[in-house]
Length: 284
Image (cartoon, rainbow, N blue to C red; front, side):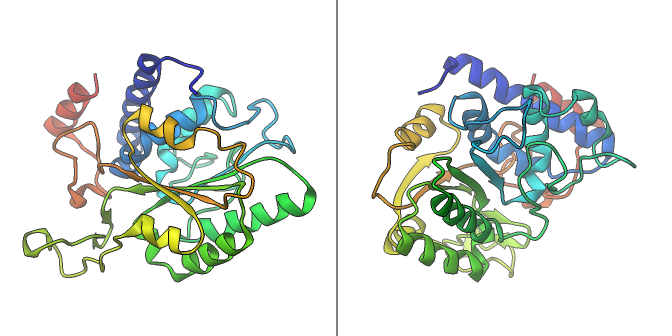
């Protein structure tokens, strides 16, 4: 399904992670680990021939609508949008600086960004509305959403899931960045050893089965394996009558830098000093 080779996609993923790290270091801000967990998913969508977009015409009416509901992951989407030509690469150097287009969370005024996602957990309701609008307008574009798993604690997601399943929106695709962690704790505490913090949330599992119960086609994949990502999205433009699609993509928060992986304390922090050099070597 991909228009690029596996090696090219892996190189893009490494480049995105390196760029994210340097943007965060320069700004002394940014959710590095959240961006790292979603990297292969976004690289596949934008470089793999899945999303139909025109960087030179961001508001092209027939474009696919992509929503990054986990808005703090914007630092991981901006390098891709700049690389494709949605806006000049120089903007990356001004991430979160005074006068910059690029804030920590995604905002609609950035070319290529469809909607604000600063309040987490609202992406799926917005995407569901877009899917309904496309149906009413007779449009064939897709509405594709990446959401964090912790966002699914927001009840509005499940209200939207009920509607989307009942209305059989086969133009709606939701990919869950299933890294198992939110800022307040784990999303699937399995035993006492896993209960790192008293604010760990109730278990979300069986997550795919929950989407299926609402009338969705549901799949589970390794969210860092490009082959599995493409297999899960194969034929997404020809899903008539199959209802919305949910892809539960199992990922690792902080993927690519061992000391960042699955360490919730790095949700807000940016590496510096010797830790920064270790991270740079890991991503070289």
